[in-house]
Image (cartoon, rainbow, N blue to C red; front, side, top):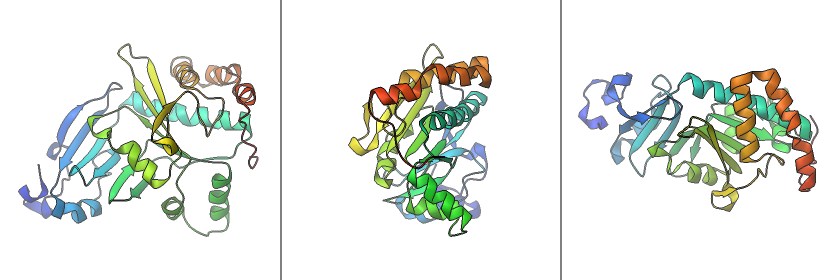
Length: 253
């Protein structure tokens, strides 16, 4: 449904019922879409979409806005990812700042929001310094400094351009986490500096592989945070990183 077809308030959607349901994700979330014409882009970019859902993606090339109504499992998994990142960076002596649902404007008027985003090492130190010295707020910092890692749960038909949008903004790595047909978590690590290529291990968090990430998150979901922390230790993340000669000797927490 295009903006020009709506009469009230410029036709901008204000209720969930005004959007087209695309489909339900494997974690139970619902993906919603709004179509618009090229001349309506300015109004779309200025609209507050947060009341209709999260993980916003505005794609001018397709003329589509996609938002998500998240399920409980989706929300829990996002929290577990942040928990995993906290313990992993502690083991690797890497500074970490989680910025959650930050929205970025990428080249070409795209607007995009991840489930989780993380600054690591020296960029995390710069963000903390900016906070301490009141130099800029987090949104201002994000506009000038892409995070090292973004994480997204549940794939949709509208995700085709998301990795390219993150790459154009300068993000180094993207994790895609979804539930498979057997409801077990599937994890994919994309190196965005190398054409969004799937890789066997993380470059920004050495020692983490898709298998380790999936196993630890599933333990957290079914056994709780205490057992999950033990699983992180048992995974030997620092030992794995040392074996591959890739421990980040950046600023210590």
